Length: 363
Ligand code: DP6
Image 1 (tube, helix red, strand yellow):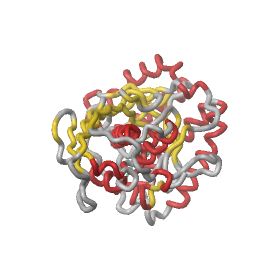
Image 2 (cartoon, helix red, strand yellow):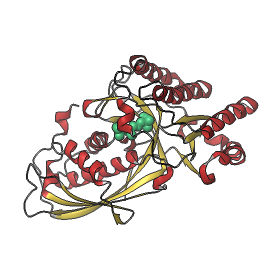
Image 3 (spheres, protein in one colour):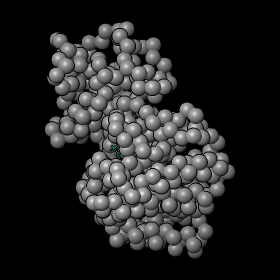
Image 4 (spheres, helix red, strand yellow):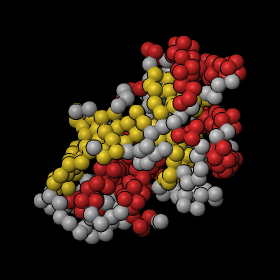
């Protein structure tokens, strides 16, 4: 499908007003998206586990205006976060609406009231853009479906992912579960830079119930915004090699997912996480987003894995928090290790137990 397939047709129904609520999860990338081109096109393909507990719930109320907003006017909306009107979140949503207005021209006809809340603390350092933008995109698609009831579920999900991507790249991987790929890759004929797809090949049962315990090492404001971060890859001395590596890693994951080879999985996932940070450390300007406690945790995980041979590994986002990944069948002993040895490195001892989930839900 191309961008043109997502341009809206004439509405087949008239809708005066209504309300819809979606709950959409966060996701954690195994092969990282880092670097993008114009129009939210990723510089390399990525793959992620959809999460289950870290999610955003968004309600969209829509009322038809007396006349549609003019071409030079902004789309008419208000935004509430956890029940309070939030002016400072509006610019990001305005930018999103500008990017999608050709694909959702019906938005001009409505006054929109968007109310959002997260299941995780806002200041936890957990990016809410993936869950937040995907929840909003799904709400918009529900309005589109009321206007055009004939659209198929497949189109609904694809366009939701397409719109979510225009809000925040990683958000396109939060519509469905549980293993999701985004970005054109030679091995995946249905893959696209425009939207994410369900990983189409065999995935061993061991990955289906994977656990992700998120250790909140530093709950502070992000030191590097994702926009700044992705821009660091323009003119980066290692950019081309990194983008090629992401393609290779996705290729190498195919037999790993199929056979459940946990050693190879852990090796690849940790290498991806450290490469992401290595890209930030070797860009100009350069950043170190890991904290001393991030390093302590990584070393403890390596020592524990060496001593016990249990399959536990880590991945990182563009921040100091650590995602500890392990199969469900080892949950008891690994959670005990986390509580005894890792939680001490978390800010105020805070961590979140999550697991792989099945994607967004309409409430
Ligand atoms: C490190 O999706 O937040 O989490 O498209 O600018 O909104 P924007 O970026 P964003 O970047 C996520 C980067 C990452 C890796 C990943 O999730 O793949």
